[in-house]
Image 1 (cartoon, rainbow, N blue to C red):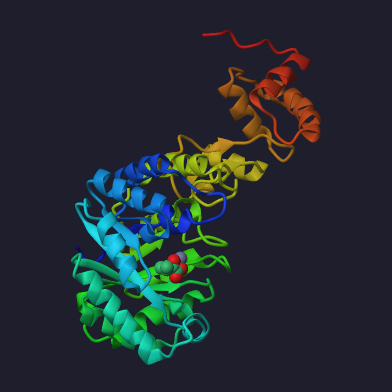
Image 2 (tube, rainbow, N blue to C red; image 1 turned 60 degrees about the vertical axis):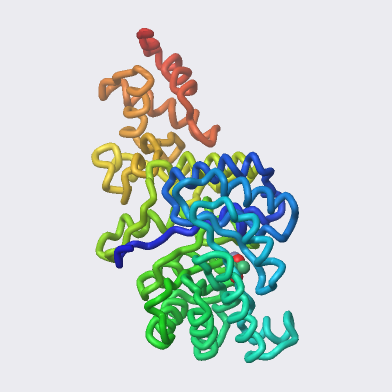
Length: 390
Ligand code: KIV
Ligand code: ZN
């Protein structure tokens, strides 16, 4: 793997799917897994096989189907979980077991009623056991975001000794600031013995709206995998959004980092996941929201019509959106009205445009948005002939 390649680990079907209301059946998961493979993700986390017979079957079927990506199954640091995951993954071309345990004092004390040394041993044992089934073992230190760095480094060292190929450093509660998360990754890169044998992975939750910023801080500081979901779905406020990190790395070549994602499939994949999960995408969602490339204020519309780059930092076609939308509202100017009128067949002179604009404003004050049919109505009021059908 080249040094500037950031692996995309998609967990839509595991961390994303565990959200209330997002449940999918095996067939729906297979359709999404096939699409993720086509999109170019490096790893598909297909599920948590011990959690239910349905999840086991889904991981098994996805393992049979997926041809390019690594297929991964989640486990706790529990022997039975690992055995069941290995069984579910047995048909995968590239199987990975993702095992781990909570490492923050809060998890150690309240969840496990244990102590740091015991947890360290459980981490080592889990990776070593997973390693008896598959070569590729990823270790997660749950709540790493709130884990003391020195202790976290010791746990990572133990996981590498046991054979871990990837070290996942989750900000499980979405608590870290980007600088803090970046510094954590840097600290591990500089202080974990044997770190050159493993990839550091960012798994950030969005409780404070910082998941994307934290993941980017992570890769800037040496991590080479980002765990993310389509549309940023996931526990509570969600996970890092795949489309956001992919486009950030693409739009900022000075970072010197790249992914293998075919960005032109992003919009369509977003709609597919939203539709299958019954989880709408907020209109102002970065990259894939319905307003992400829509311009409604007169000043912006005038700029975009003259040159798209005045108000757009990426070409919508690069993410699979066919064109920027010029939305007509009471805030729109003459340039936008002329542009949209032309699209539906009316080539207006300057004088006509003045008349049409006055009527347009009275319509627009009564409606949220002026659609093509309204334009025809406006033209009737000012007695401009309907366009001749082609
Ligand atoms: O957020 C988290 O810590 C997780 C782990 C199970 C990887 O999802
Ligand atoms: Zn998570």
